[in-house]
Length: 221
Length: 353
Image 1 (spheres, each protein chain N blue to C red):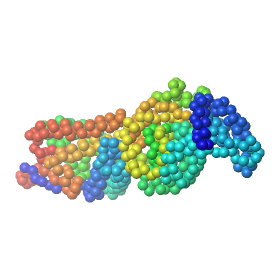
Image 2: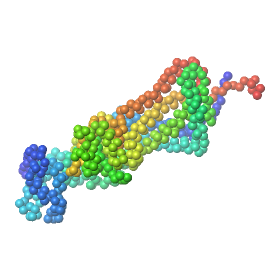
Image 3: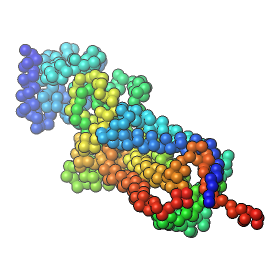
Image 4: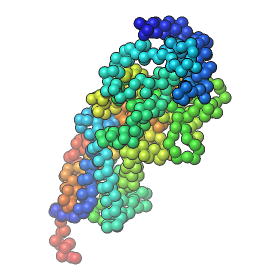
């Protein structure tokens, strides 16, 4: 038999950051769609409204990224432990996790990774978040910031290869984030119930199904 | 009656002499220019009455001849101090005069305030910078930037990339006109339109269009444009694009639809198919070469420093982006499908992600 146990998985600053980031990125994707295809998409009415909302959401995401980085680096000091894959993760952990998602999940085998507050992410998550948080997000913030101030930062734009290269990179990065959102939201439904992973991101507490300890074994101990 | 006669003479002159150069076609031009073509020439009152012969020769006015506009020159000129008669612009340009008279601008400036009749040329033979400089004679650039920045995002960028008349007249049929800009090597000063002499150094050909138009077919292909952009790197030069109207009007006004960004930004990539490169000529004007259709939309190197949000997006880039998003979407779709098919294999509480 199994019973429920509650584990405090996600501290409040991380939850605030996560939802700020989530709403910010969704807003950026939707407004970005109107900005790139205004002749086909008109969600926010005036084009200028879409641009202003896009810029505002960009600033919010940038600030929330700064807060996230500061929290993990200075307050929690667990950035490397949580986000950087270990050698073992790279050698076999990622493959083991992929094997689970793409094969053994369908035959009913258990997840090889068990989340704890000290090791929240499986090796695939670690690798994906590492790329997203330390490569893609800084790049999209950097390119977006340059595009908000084209005339004053023209020299930098020229050094980087021109505005077209920058706009193209910003667009492709945005597409990567949209793709990531699809995968991220779907994978979040793979808990023991479809919303099991959404709740801890809202209230911090994750329900875990833990095997009951056999009374005889307990007595032996 | 004077006006009528003058106009008829002008039409006749244009008809007869349009293919010839001004000096050869209208002999009296030479007579006038023998004095007025000298830099030190002054009226009795001490005003400069110099006319740049090179610039004048490039105008349509030189074809109709000096005496078409100045049809009554006294026999004692210039010694008698009497000024020759002057035509009124509306004598020939009546529709423009009528249109201009109705505009907000009519009481603010006369034709001559913007158009020097001895140097005037069609907008397509001028750089965007030169056209905007005419407006800047009265409209202070800093004040303009400040007033536009109140409502226009990235006002400085817009003002750098547009002719004032693009928004403030009912001009139509927009194209992208690129010009070559330069600055001193190692300098961080603002780029300025490259001069004929600067560009002449880049080619051994008399025709400086060959700087970009390598095969000399009077059209710039995408390949030639890309090669030129690579060539510009490290030379402190750039190809700067401006949105310019092909059909210019004099109906100066504040148009309601120009407050709406979609007027330009939602016109779609089809509106951005036509572009030109303007080259300076020896007379201080410009001549332009047509660029291969769609070059503005090239993914990277066609116009690396020109991009209009929403309008100059590249289709290949859109396809790559769509493939990335589709790849992301396909995971939930396929995984979810097999998840549904194999749901009986799982005890739900065993499978946390």
